[in-house]
Image 1 (cartoon, helix red, strand yellow):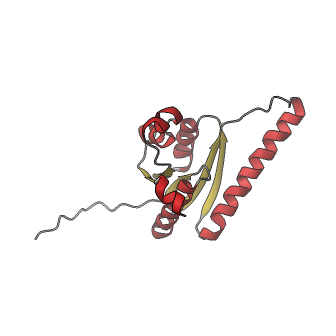
Image 2 (image 1 turned 90 degrees about the vertical axis):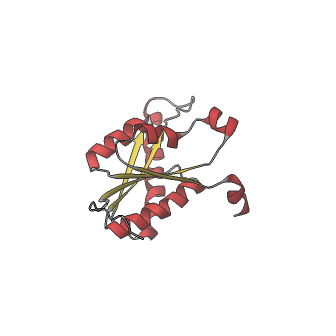
Image 3 (image 1 turned 180 degrees about the vertical axis):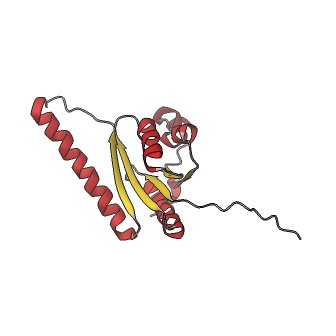
Length: 156
């Protein structure tokens, strides 16, 4: 049997891992970390939050709230990636995820995006939307995605 060989080697130098801190994201992080180690790539751990303004805050208190929230997310990301022992950088943004990803992809030369999905089906997916699908449709580089089926997640 003849085996088809490719003359193009795939190498990733900058891997963007997107997280919402869910179980599905944690599983995807493990794949991203292994790929980063294998390719000696920089691992960019990233989170995008949609700012929700508490109705009881205004002025300086509101700015302090956003600053505190941002620092908490940064610390969560740092704690998440510390045990991975990979070259890493934390990225945070607020607003629409597709704009943040586009900006990060260009700024950091991202050549692979890794994101977990929740594996929702049917009405749940229609009502909640699909961030992973949005990323798949708008990304300008390859995207690796996977899901943790709800029945598997319940067993853990």
